[in-house]
Image 1 (cartoon, helix red, strand yellow):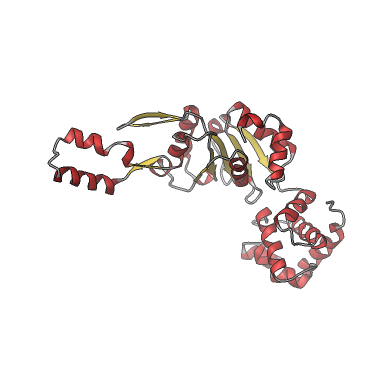
Image 2: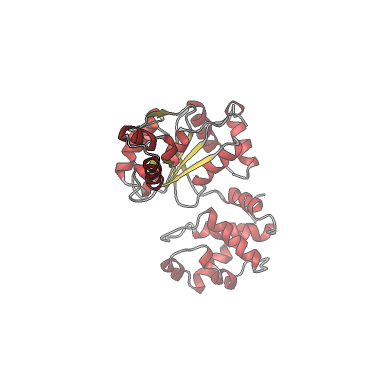
Length: 306
């Protein structure tokens, strides 16, 4: 699909729906504006609410390449843009010397060409030449250092990079940029101002049930509603790490593998490790607490539509 085909918020929402991404109108509107204003979209929210998936489904919708930069502490220019292939350069020098070529300027010009560059995600996105622009997913920016934000701001301003030995490389088609953050720290205002901002919350019970039906088609509707109602109840409690959509899907798949057709206190206690990832959280779920949540899930499951 071409960018011009995504010519309305409804078209965006329909395409997301066709790729099994359940999005509300506010998110579809933010994506539409991001595409049509040629601005990065900055998605913030708790882990596991589907931020990364937005970049993936956009690449799928537009039939283009997804270029992902996974951020981490210590990420620098060499890992984000490019680095020289030193082993290949040394091999080329030895080959040229063996051929009797000793002109240092010619050797330098030869080994510092594009053939000897290892392209990292930002370089790949700027130097892309496909029919549609690529989707550049800058994932979990809050994990990177603040110094990297300043560097990224420069890249996003002009969509070009400068390599001293080669020159300036500018994007023919600026990439579609999706930036995500789990908000473990605040991202600088200067970078946010370059983007359209959207906060992704946990889905409503009805939305999450729709996700379960699509991601786990073999689950019966009663169990699906019970799973969703229980997870929604868990999220109302004070846990260190609340379960995201990914954990809901994992739990549903685990229950299917165990042949479960109806939720119970016993099976819920046995499978808490698919929902909660910290021992302190699991310890809070003693038998009485779990039983109370399961009973509440049964009571609220019938109120979930779909």
